[in-house]
Image 1 (cartoon, rainbow, N blue to C red):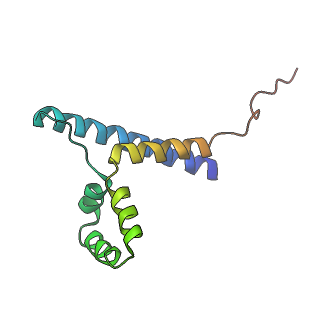
Image 2 (cartoon, rainbow, N blue to C red):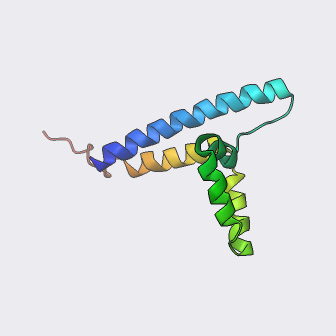
Image 3 (cartoon, rainbow, N blue to C red):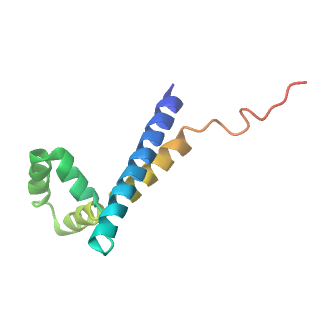
Amino acid sequence: MLRFIFRALGFVLLAAAFAVLVVDGSRSIAGGRPLFTSLGDGAAAIGGVRYGAALAVAAGWPGPAQRIVAGLLAVPGALAAGALGLGLLHAGRPADGAFSERRT
């Protein structure tokens, strides 16, 4: 059951990554330069006020933690969703050799 959930979420995240990639591609063509939606922009669009409050809390963290959070939020959303989706698909795969036994 857990493998099914991992695989389903993995496929949904891969589909979302592809959709974001298509939108970013069309924005890049229209803008005449590469434009990517970062994780921070996506979180701001989804989270709104809660995202702003989380950033205010993160502003009080020590310097290295702020740089780590800023670096993570600058990652392109399609790349992050695709990587997480592939990771979930890998985690939900059947055990090695589960379907390879041939009964005669």
